[in-house]
Amino acid sequence: MKKTALLLATALAATIAAMPATADTKDKKIALSNNYAGNSWRQSMLKSWDKVTKQAVADGVVAAADPFTTSENQVTEQAAQIQNLILQGYDAIVINAASPDALNGVVKQACDAGITVVSFDGIVTEPCAWRIAVDFKKMGAVQVDYLAEKMKDGGNLLEIRGLAGVFVDDEIHKGIEEGVGKHSQFKIVGSVHGDWAQEVAQKAVAGILPSLPEVKAVVTQGGDGYGAAQAFKAAGRPTPLIIMGNRQDELAWWKEQKNANGYETMSVSIAPGVSTLAFWVAQMILDGKEVPKDLVVPFLQINQGDLEKSLETTEKGGVANVEYSKEDAEKVVAGK
Image (cartoon, rainbow, N blue to C red; front, side):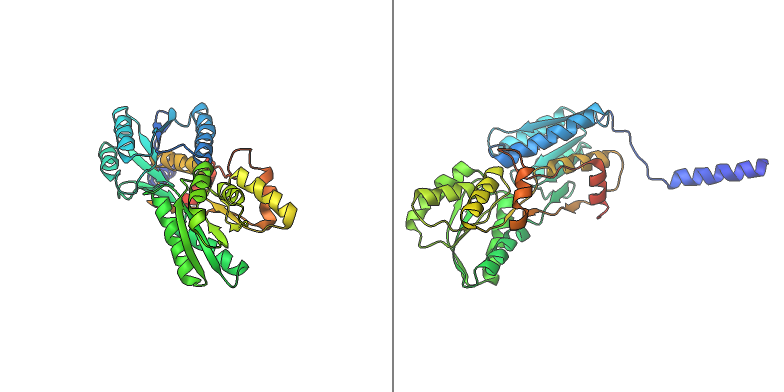
């Protein structure tokens, strides 16, 4: 009997030793460092963070999940913000970064202080941090692939870019350039920065249109399609095929045009709810889980047949979205 009990105890000890160590995160504090909130995508991103993390705090998963947003998209301001978060004793900092490399110094300071750093959307390149992103280059390339299917003869393109100097803007632009290189029947005849905001995009497009020849299509980054459409309308120019970016006002305009004259396009963007994935990844790391340093999530694409359904589930003034549960995050980490 004693021998059997000893064997069972030994087996149990071996099983426990083989199990991955986990840490209790109910006393852990996570902060969000966000560099910009001046468009509907960023506002939806913050809303998703607030919705999911408040519930996690209420459920006792973590002690706090506080969001902080800088007033301007400035690296120096975000670096100072992160330094303050280090001093305030947060256990993890989730970052939507103003630059992929200019924040690496302060990110390293956080890591050296024992703080977990998870970047998303605007990622950082400091090796100690984790990164969550979509394949933004592909997101740019698929736009030109789509145009090549719709416009066999090609034509002139206007490119609307995002925030200058931000990783996302650079990568989508590279993808569009690669797409034009692949489909040589297209030519970019003008480029402006719309800052992922309809009002900024409308003003920028209105400013360049008088100097442009006929534009067959507009390639974009999100939050700029509706503004572009309004600029073409105000200039009295034919409406080109405009790639949309999943914003509710873009989808509503697209539906109006589709009903009126059969207008066809597509829409693509990263879901704002990726902030909630970053939260759960940070929580998992604090809980002792093994998480790959680089995670890639699919972008959200809306096609002609998906338009009405997507519009129905997108709140007015918002963005078509996907929010992540802890179980969803575990599947992403596992590569499922």
